[in-house]
Length: 98
Image 1 (tube, one colour):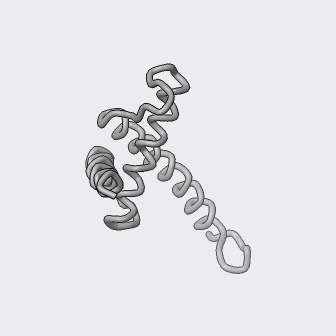
Image 2 (cartoon, rainbow, N blue to C red):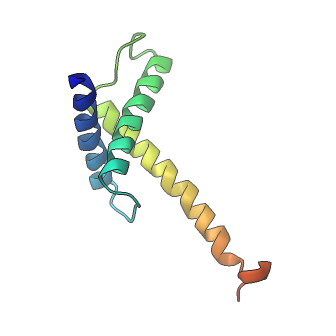
Image 3 (tube, rainbow, N blue to C red):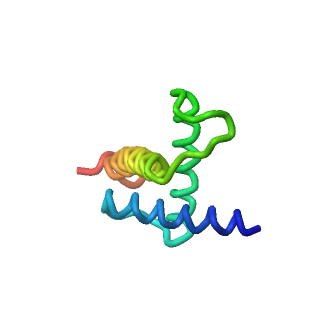
């Protein structure tokens, strides 16, 4: 139980650090920031194992977790920017906006 709470706390710190490094308008509050940090750590651990930086079962460090969270935040912004741009070009009823 204590390990789970520790993971949430580190995820919150890593997610907040990623949002601090990449400022901008992002939805979500504390829970989304926590999930971003935890997912960043998982992504960094997976990429590290593929590149041979980590052994099987070894977790990513703080810096790599932050880089993973920045990568995920950048991908999220890239996907949502394209989606919003495509929606704003088409007006109601499927007609192109002027």
